[in-house]
Image (cartoon, rainbow, N blue to C red; front, side, top):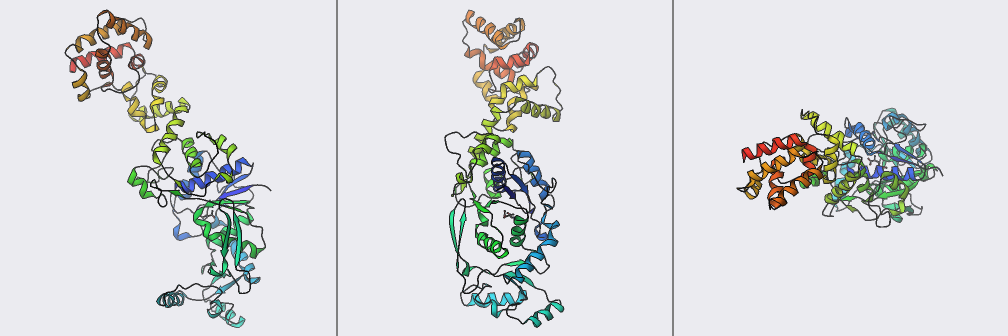
Length: 500
Ligand code: GLU
């Protein structure tokens, strides 16, 4: 069997990370089996269409390195890949179902249905349009052929409904979900879902099943929220006489508390993004928050899928090699922002330093800093291992490019002693006269002087750091000296002696 899977989002806004994970699982599964990963845009519901959402989805998949093999912008032979461009084709399939008695035209007006609903509610029940009452309602099963013809002639609006169950048939429908196992549904409890709306447009269910069939989708891997639709979809496949794909319903991503589905509000409340890229100013993205795509991919892959073994850090290629639908867990995965950060830190430390360097170069350009005497490569060499998020970069690196103007008051109060100016003058001389600016040379020179003069290193290191950085932070102080160069160190030390 050739493997073809699809990610089928509706372009109703930015893609939530739950959707991102569904896309990722589809991608991993396709690549693992040498199959095809398709992006299909389900945009039949024009009321919910949001401008820019499709472009956002494409940009996200590209950023994560999981671009589809076939999509609206990269069509294969199964196109078009937007349902709005396929809309003329669906009615034909609905008519096939009407013809083989699996579906019917329903002329009930919105008001009529509303009063039926209210009447049922008054009796403490719920109105369901299905096998029990369809013969008493206004449709092509209850009306004569002439009446139906007349209504159509008079342009009476109608929808097409699917017969979910018919008296005399076996009620129970047994299905298999690759993640949940056996699923049995009593089809007599289902309603007759609308498959074509009054405007002639298909609903999600019809369009989705028809397209999965026409695009020869072998596996439907999608969010758990679609599990309740699985019975209807299987019934539709059966009614058409088509082979059903394999279904796999992926569990939800849960709030950090473990209770309920992760929402945008959780992100706002706890200060972490739930969208891959920035959508607008109120909707930040992981990218802008300093996450690497490979870290997000790694974290999301493991949030609901167990690769077996102890190892947790994987590249996309390694994930592809390990992935299986069987490893997806039944229970929802709790989103843990701290753990997500940890994955980012690990990937950031392993990342190509050229990437961090180019981020740094960008920052310098944005800030209009042109400091040619400090090598960005040297700075990155010292700070890359100190980053958790790429956005930490400036905070870890600014002092290599900007000399301190102010000094951390608390640090000065604690570390600046009466003899500090004198000691720092000697340190300054030692640096100035060192025969090179290697960290080891500078460190050896200063330590020798301290030893000869019976001065504890503690009296030197903290004030020296304050003089160079402005605060008690940063990597090894001699490494900082070395990157700054002798002249800049001398300048900064002299200035600190002057100001403190
Ligand atoms: N358009 C549906 C969604 O937005 C697709 C569900 C499916 O994959 O079948 O999630």
